[in-house]
Image (cartoon, rainbow over the protein chains, first blue to last red):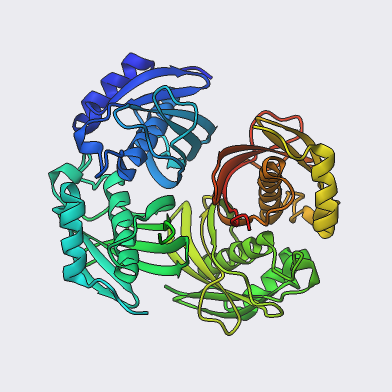
Length: 140
Length: 140
Length: 140
Length: 140
């Protein structure tokens, strides 16, 4: 399937529409097979002990899936998350960014479904796994 | 079952151990049937359009369940979220705090399970529903 | 909200449309607050050791939510499950039926969301908790 | 990681311990990267219209993950499902078996986590996606 937004297009969209969080993320790669998003881990993402907080990992998965959908349908639609299930499996490695690898499993007329594997940069074993469903509003 | 931490005890714990996020939350009520936690919605929780962000709602559910567990087992254990499933059902009402109502469905030796209903203050219909599993480390 | 199908109406629907599984279930109660469905536990629902199998518990939750939706929208629509998250918390009591208590949290134009608590008959503590999302096809 | 049970070992285990459901399944492949399990679709798995029922798809995912865990830890332990989240994405193709491809994402001392993609045989696009958590009892 054709890509409607590439790395630069997605980055621009993020800055324009989500100014508050855009600085936390960087689009690493986008292609037919999915998208990789980086969470630039900083002080405000951490919990006591230096672990990245659950909500920050959730945000990474959520934004990664959102951008994966937009890469296919373009920047016009207003998709909203309707469901997410997340497994937290290992502690992130201290002082490393997190990478979320999103794959789109279904892109229907009204629902999109996919999952995201989250890893500390340079580690093979995943920190978390999330699946997400987005509701896509009908084209007007 | 006996409560080991009341509103004041939980609030003190939150301030001591989770200084970064403690200011976002207020423990409204805790009892045998569960716990109600308030997210004091401010600018940094919002997405474009004035909606509370998904990660902020997730954080409310996660902290509410965590405190509900601690109210029963005391402040000693280091419980970690292993799984969460969340349904986002309605847009929060603009300009209102969110209330998360947590109920503990299982408190086992190694796993605790519960769910949280999230509502805009003063609204009957829920904004979100989350279920969460926490792993409780063995007593040493 | 008005009920469009009561116990008898739902039971009739189940027999007509789901003949294969209708004999496994009995609608105990339906009202504005939700629906209680009984799984008449028999040999074919059991796993070694006499426990009710996971898929049988899943089926109870799935059918309970389905009927709760139909009680509100009537027998016409063809709703399909799009997501389910289930927590298995305790072993069912041997030799007892299971009761699934469904509550509808959202009944939108295209999505319905609810959850189900599953208990062994006569027990207070839940065996399982499930949340389910159904996609409701547009009215033609 | 070393495999403790291969296709033949897992098939034997299934027949011995789960006689009731063993005939429904066939272990296609098992290796370090995961396991593929076939659901031999027959009349009793179908819903009206010829679709494989949700509980049958759930059972395929659940058994696939269970066997993937046993392939690594051997037939001794008694693992139980504690959580499952499943997305139903497409109707299965009528008259075809279903294949569940399980990958193990974490195999810890007390919890194992993985996911399963379910496809109609010969189709690229998945019918369903499930993630599952198993609790592994401590070694005595």
